[in-house]
Amino acid sequence: MPVADFEPVIGLEVHAQLLTRTKIFCGCATAFGAAPNTQVCPTCLGLPGALPQLNRAAVEMAVRAGKAFGCNIATRSVWSRKNYFYPDLPKGYQISQFELPICAGGAVPVPGLGKVALERIHLEEDAGKNIHAEGGSEVDLNRSGTPLIEIVGKPDLRSAEDASEYLKALRLALIYLGVNDGNLEEGSFRCDANVSVRPRGAEKYGTRVELKNINSFRFVRQAIDFEIGRQVEAIQKGEKIRMETRLFDHEKGVTRPMRSKEEANDYRYFPEPDLPPLTISQAFIDAVALPKLPNQIAEELEAAGVPAADARTLIADPRLVSVHQRIGGDPRRAALFVVGELARAVNEKEADLSALKFEPALVREAFALQDSGAISSTAARDVLAELIRSGKPPQQIVQEKGLAQVSDTSALEAVVDAVIARNPGEVAKYRGGKTNLLGFFVGQAMRDLKGKGNPSVLNGLFTKKLQG
Ligand code: ADP
Ligand code: MG
Ligand code: ZN
Image (cartoon, rainbow, N blue to C red; front, side):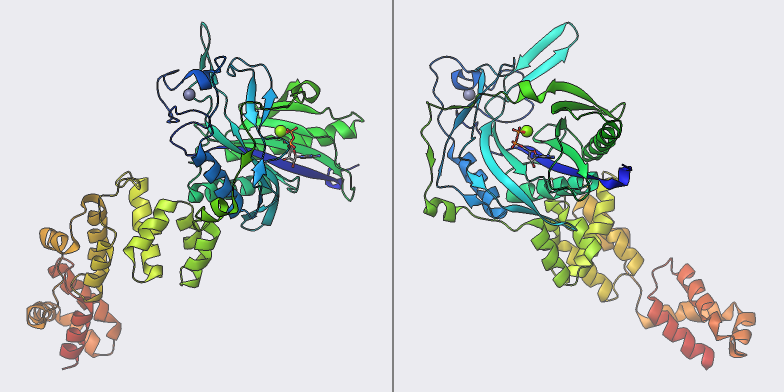
């Protein structure tokens, strides 16, 4: 059967660390980057006798995500122990939700794909981290007990490209919801990809392989594409696909078996005896505030006249949306500034979106100076660049840099007369019909004025004098 007759089937599981200050079952801090094993206590170390106590903020964030994606929020969900042995899991089990998760169903809106359906979102605790170094391996338990939501997507994706678009949309939505920082490198947003192939038109899914912890969108696409190719080739050779977990080797661009799913799936979920079922009231659910999602903001920006491409650039970073909003005024013009001057300054490390040096509303003052003719459009760009760099008010920048445009007719008239006097040949040609020489005259005057003449006033003066 030719490759084109196979259809890939992909379902993603995403683990997203919740942005709570403290862990899910104890009061230890969740901040990333602390010295190893400094943010631990008997509970998250898994010492015998220590009891878990649920963090309300984690529940709130899970509910917020569930509401945003239109899930059914369970007023009663239960905790389970997912048992497995690993050095970074001192208890020997992870507290998770299995039978009754906090959120069921729902879907993630993905630009270009419509809505991608979810199976569930459940709460669980993160494990610690094994650090493999020369001379041995060490365990850092700072991460142990960090709250996670696992967002389990239905196997509804059909290409590596779609999978990566879904992940991008999900990540951005979680950032806007304020529940996750979207940091793939630090591992606060992690993805496992389940991949299978089946003959096009078949109803039954093929055997799936799980690709673990892929930490960039590019690697997601590469890993899935490689896996689709590998499975199709195997089937074409008459081999059977083994249900297994594989790891992506991004240096070689291949996936490799890590463990067979038979062992991996043998988690032996037990009910968690130390935690009562999680019951939440409808009033609690209703009280969880829901900020706007990025696609909704993009639609509103477009409706306000911002070009679609600019709107997409803006929503890619909530900090850009915030600057845009704080500039105010004409949304289209403000967007042009944010995706143009500001983005450029950020690229060139002259601005930091997390610590802006300027008050966004001042951008409109620079626009106003340009509109009134007080500065030229070229000078306006200089003013904006300096505003971004220093935060000085536009008026002050204009004065300090001597950018004010000369619009005063009597001052300009002297320059116009001088230009006419020293170019008798051009004047004769102009009067003989070569009126496109106007630009030449204006250019000469601009040079004399070091670029600060008001071009439209100069145009008018030359037209009048050359005709006379
Ligand atoms: P497990 O705990 O074994 O990973 P889950 O139910 O948590 O099982 O996750 C199953 C994931 O695998 C879901 O994201 C689902 O969409 C996906 N999936 C299930 N069957 C297939 C299949 N045949 N091909 C691809 N993905 C699949
Ligand atoms: Mg899985
Ligand atoms: Zn702790």
